[in-house]
Length: 193
Image 1 (cartoon, rainbow, N blue to C red):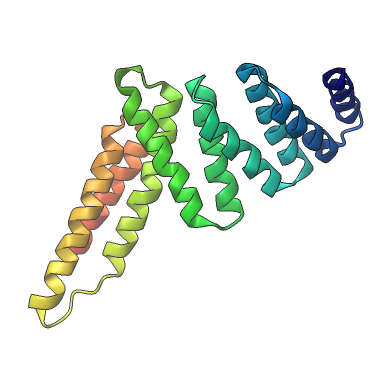
Image 2 (cartoon, helix red, strand yellow):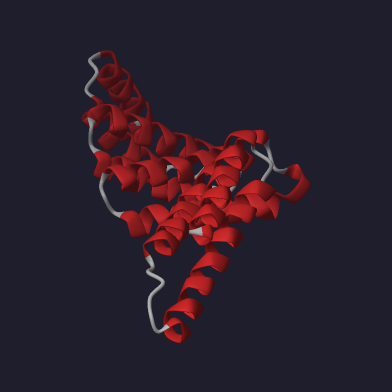
C-alpha cells in the first residue's frame, strides 16, 4: 500500500514539477524496494529529477549509488559514471571527477571487444582530460641550467605526455585522435625550440 501511495506521490510531484519532492520519495522507495531492477530505476529517476531540481548534491548521491550498486546494464552504469564526472566538474571537485574518469576508462578497457561506441567515446574524452594535464605539466616545466638536473624531469614529463596521447589515439575515436595528434605535434615543436 505504501508503495502505491509513494508512486502516486511521485506522479503528482512530476505533474507539478516538484522535482526535489519527487527525489525524496523516489529515494525512500528505492530503499524499501527488494527488486534490483525496480530499485535501480528509482535511483536513476531520482538522479535525473535532482538534476532538474538543480540539487547537484542529491544528483551526485543518486548517480554514485547507482554506479556503485548496479553494474547491469553496463551502458547505464557508464552513463552514471559520466554524469558523476560532469557533476563533480561543475561542483569544482576535480579529484572526484578524475576518479570517475578513471572508472570510465577502466570499464571501457574491461569491455574489450564488446566496448560500445559510446563507451569508447567517453573513455577517449576522459583520457584526453588526463593527457591535457600531462601536456600542461610538460609545457610548464622549464628546461634550465644545469641541464643535468632539469633535463631528466623534462624527459619524464615528455614520456608521460606522449604515452597519455598515444593512449587516447589507441581508443580509436576520430575526434580525440585528431586532438592527440595535434598535441603530439605541439610537443615536438616545443622540443625543437
